[in-house]
Image (cartoon, rainbow, N blue to C red; front, side, top):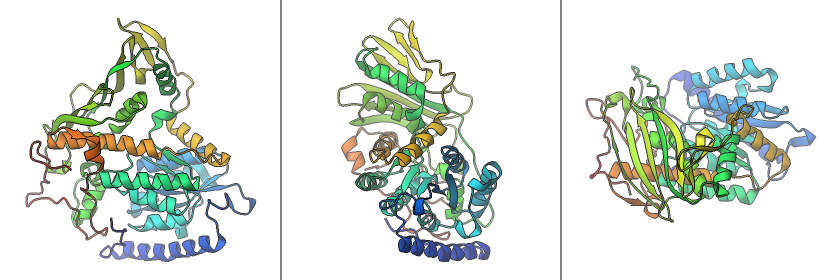
Length: 445
């Protein structure tokens, strides 16, 4: 994959900001090298125990991640921010500064705009928060690990198989360097999930024979196309509806539930088959993604998970995970175990449980402080991401797809060039409609 290129044809104001960011970022890189501040060699400079954090991707989830990071430890400061869009960065910065005061130490010199902005933010910090649209995650994670930075990255961690392989390779490098890596699959830090799944692993409902999981809801936002937008800007402003950026909602949202099933199984599926399409959400503003998926994932022991995700208003909704064993069953997200007749045998009430979004940052920063060289969630984050991509491959193609064929796919969704006037690989026709996968015809491997 080509490295990101700075945009060439942008408004004068944004171009000026980008050029200033490059000069300032280059100075930061040079200064970090000269001072030998890599976390591999010195935890925090000159006896100062303040952890410097950079946020890359300043949308709602990025702002939330920065808020949770700043709340995880009294000696954490946000020192740099990066985003493709200046308005997103400034909105996030104003929000965080109003809440956290002098814990937000971002200046004009450490605000970086554009496709190359991530490089300069990484250079300025000890810990990097990656919260851009998921398609950029492999590039940013690889760069952060190469620079010796601890990382928190939002889920999913890629949108195609080459991206997953890049993340797995960087995860191995992070392990060698002793870097801590957190992934935003926060159920792993949620007390109710932890206790429920531990009881399942302890055999309280017997051997698992079947599983089902859901993310069925009404869908998300749309940002209408604006006059003068390039195709690249339009797709990035509407990243949820383009696979190179989002991976479809089976990957962007349903990964949470699929990941829980993998956690229960302590394994990943060996193949999948399924069906899906666009039944209701068919207008051009919904890009190329489906509005429903149903996937049957098969595991090596022959057990199966039946997975549903849907973005259609007015339908039955559920965000949940369920398993059936030889002695009972569980509503996992309900923190409940039952016998085969449906009688509750155990329940976690969760009245005083910590917010799992906060807990995952508390745990990450505690691991960084402790020098825990084994704290690395990138491996299961990448493989659960790949599970969701396997499901998309099955629904888009209409074929049974093996894990091995899926993870070795060479189909790369990312653009060949990153610039505002560059073209993504998927483009609209003359009427503004994007091509959509056709089961039985679409090739995914």
